[in-house]
Amino acid sequence: SELQLEIRTLVSGLNTLFEYLGVREECFAVGPLSRIIASDLANYSQAKTRRKTAQSKASVIFVDRTLDLTGAVGHHGDNLAEKIFSMLPKLPGHANDVMVSMVEFTALKTDDADCNIIAPGCLAQSADPAAKALWESLMNLKQKEAVMEVRRHLVEAASRENLPIKMSMGRVTPEQLTSFTQLFKKKFEALENHSGVLQIALATVQTLKHPQNAKWDNFLAFERLLMQNLGESALPGVLNQLLPIIKSHNNRTDDDYTPEDLLVLLVYIYSIAGEVNTGKELDEAEGKVKESLVHSISDEPELSALLQKITDHVHKGRG
Image 1 (cartoon, one colour):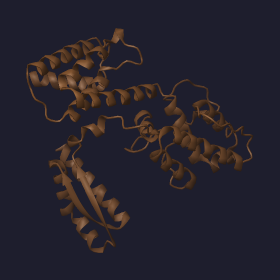
Image 2 (cartoon, one colour; image 1 turned 45 degrees about the horizontal axis):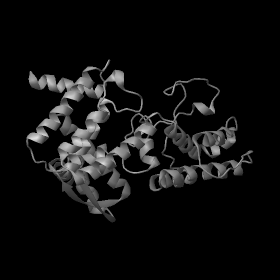
Image 3 (cartoon, rainbow, N blue to C red; image 1 turned 135 degrees about the vertical axis):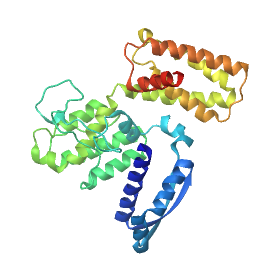
Image 4 (cartoon, rainbow, N blue to C red; image 1 turned 90 degrees about the vertical axis):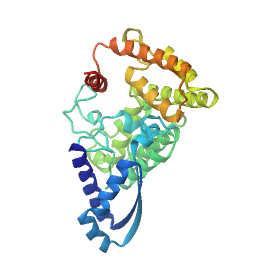
């Protein structure tokens, strides 16, 4: 089946990674699918040969995604790297990198954010020590500190190239970062020397300017409120708090939640709620949420790919 093929591909990929690292793994699994993957890796013929010659040891923990849905749908803290991964389009053929628009360094005039005439940049800059250090900072620092680190790297790069940079302290804005990156435009040697840092800087600017950036912060605030309320009241009360934010397409603004956003919030709520005590109050609250959500989805002028997939499954299930 397709799932078995994907598991075999994953096992093969993991074995290649461990071979490159020169490690002999000890696997731990949490969940039924994780146990299958760990077992297949243990019995993989090429892995058995590798373990005999590996010089180092490593512990690998497999956890079923379905046992930690909160981790998949939640907006975790004030981290710039996570925002970049969530908002910028994926780099084709890669699961952990994004496409960074490089149009700003060209003479091309376009308002199309998805313009594919110019080859995109990316986050992986293994040959650039400064870019690697910057990216590690973005993963570990809060957003405010991370953007200051991006500015610092741009200032240092511009100074090395004797570019006329005007340093200003205080709050870092996307416009300020853009003005710094523009200093490198048409300076081909400087562009080549600092291309890694510039690509990460552009990724930062494009994320901060992304229309979903403000909604991310709203998500985070609302999730924290839901978590607090779940600790103080029962699930029906929390579900009732969702009703005012479920709006039809004609009544929504860009800052309001779409049906997909609401489904994410529902998954988050039920994931952190744990075991739920059923009863009349919960049935009524769930019924109101279902009714409002169905009306919202029905009012969509065009269903997204996710909603189409969900509604197709519902129709097939009823059929």
